[in-house]
Image 1 (cartoon, rainbow, N blue to C red):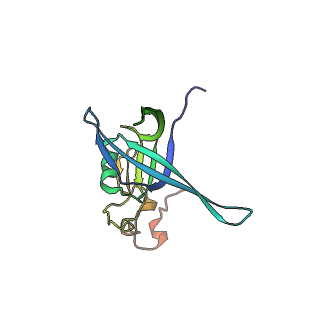
Image 2: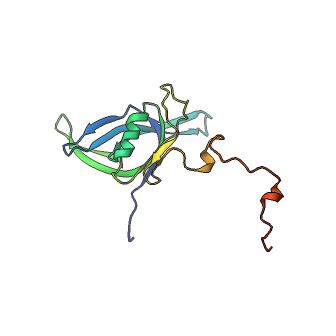
Image 3: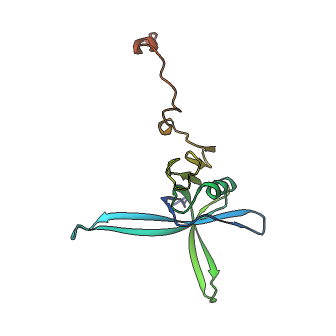
Length: 168
């Protein structure tokens, strides 16, 4: 294989408020955990079952970190794209440990807030999300825009709006 891909896409809920740390270099890192839940119905009993996975997330991207710090709270639903990174550390008992995190790098990654504007109890004032690749804050797709944001249809009959110079 000529190349490889390390990409993670998650949609889940924050398990805790974002925590901001400053590295010795002066760069800021925003960390939090995200829960993703898989649901299914047991074929034998008909009982509903759930399995929740917890993912540690670290954001090194300054702009995405600001958005997470400002608008994300425990329970917020988010969409994120990042990479898996495994790190080794020594715990307080002196044991070597490994942890795998979803990392949004400095110039890569995406974070979109999925809660509706009025959907949070804290009343956060945001519209949608911030995408590093798209580079805009808010909704970008015409299909995602609310009725007030859509361009009004021109007045008149449809036949008046069509161009009659089309040769077919």
